[in-house]
Length: 285
Image: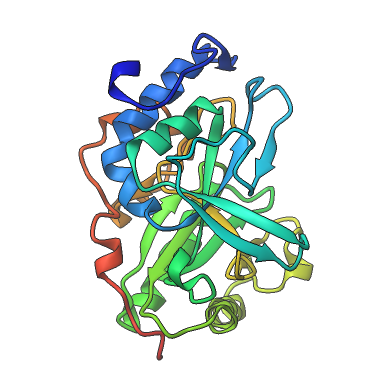
């Protein structure tokens, strides 16, 4: 493999998912094979890594800043972080070598910003993050997602959906340039309030987000510098789940996010998020 990439591999036999005995070499292979679908969705976005050098049962850590020893050929994006009060050099992943390099760092989870680096404070993606609180299940999440899609359809929005790789769904709208994060956050918040008025399950406020038997439509992720798990990224879950773009028609009772994992996602023929960035929309309603 080394003749085909700039990456120097390490610890390829390291077990990263002990329950499945998945090695680092298999994680690297997964990212190589999914790259044709994934790279276009990462392009020109700041990346935040969630690394698990000792596997998912070891201690993981988030890494916003490119790590010590980052090769000179890895592109980075400089930003001063007001919250962290320090300089940050985010990784940019526009090519296969960089994706393989991140996988070799045991960066199981790859997170992306909702804006591109050339307009960091101007989002081009709007995120509805939908998670259930027990005893609600993924079936309930799908019901809420389909209700949201129905309302978005009525307003002529084209929405895209993916599993979060955990217990929820992400619904994304690509938007035209010109909106700030306050506006996109308020857009999602207002939609959440509207849906909450017609449902006992849906809550729209952060203070209610942990109430048992509810589904919070999280608008707070629509904030500069915040991230979502990238489409096709693995998750640090025992079943090696993948945050997987879906066709809307796949949201049917009985569907389980664990079905989409390091083994099964590579067999999927469809690319439901192909053309995502060609579908930019105005937010006027």
